[in-house]
Length: 160
Image (cartoon, rainbow, N blue to C red; front, top):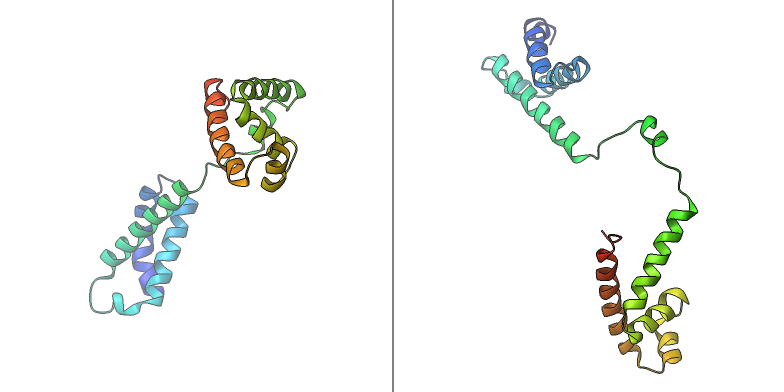
């Protein structure tokens, strides 16, 4: 292992630096992991030149690191939180007015179902009893009412 390190660590580090766009710490991690895999799998380099295998392993590790980094959300520091505006009640009031306005555009039977189930917190059975309609109708109207409400909110720029 010492001989392998002495012969290949320098060129492998330069190659890893190139793969990692000059990030020495990440390049050193790639070299360390590559040599660890060589130690764990001595049969891979026993009867052939070690350098092509080492470089292939380093390249694969760099690709894996790149893909893993892209799969994670972008990290931001504490400074990004300082520039965010503090939440205020005015924004929430404007949104609730827009939601109330959008609810006003719904058909009365859809609006009533949403008021009973969401705003008054009633179950489907309780809403059905309060509205004098079957529970299945409450479910159906709730589905279509939410779809219509989403469209109304999208028109106002509030829904994703």
